[in-house]
Length: 68
Image 1 (cartoon, rainbow, N blue to C red):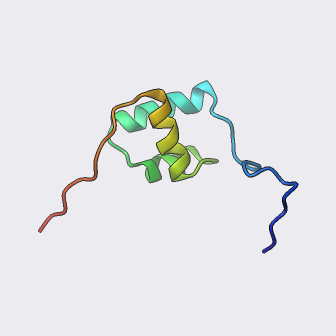
Image 2: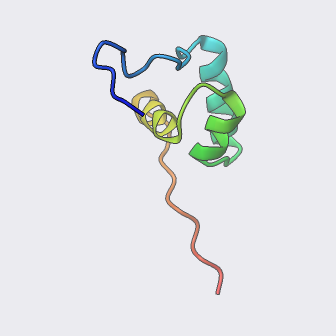
């Protein structure tokens, strides 16, 4: 795989439409993880979802404690 400096980093990613933001908020409220949300809405990475949650000012959730 080669690096193409002329190709924008975000190419192939979908923009955050109102519909996608609404779905992100709904899934976040239901307790879905960022990775699960990214897979569900498509066109976004886990990190993109985390960033959008932060920019929207949604309540951050920590990791669930490990079960022993």
